[in-house]
Image (cartoon, rainbow, N blue to C red; front, side):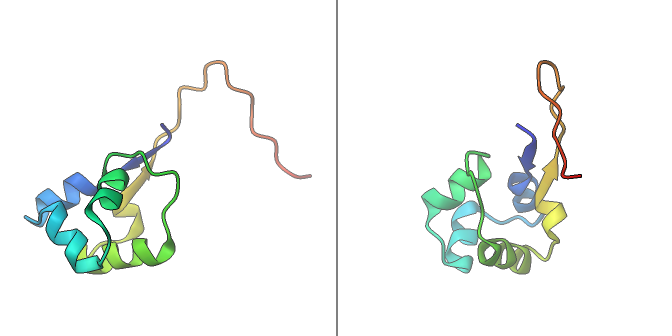
Length: 80
């Protein structure tokens, strides 16, 4: 996976539970858990904003790009 969600690290650093965060940003615990485990396919900007506000962080503190090894992958084409 190329995108790593670092929610566990942020929650640990702030001594906050996933349940507490879910309550504070008004999102269901199952949906937040999907995000935490990296199984989410997308995240709304409003959700990202709420998480960042409660955890006092920037989006880059929450998500990180990790390039795949690239083996067997076609190069990404860009518009000319």
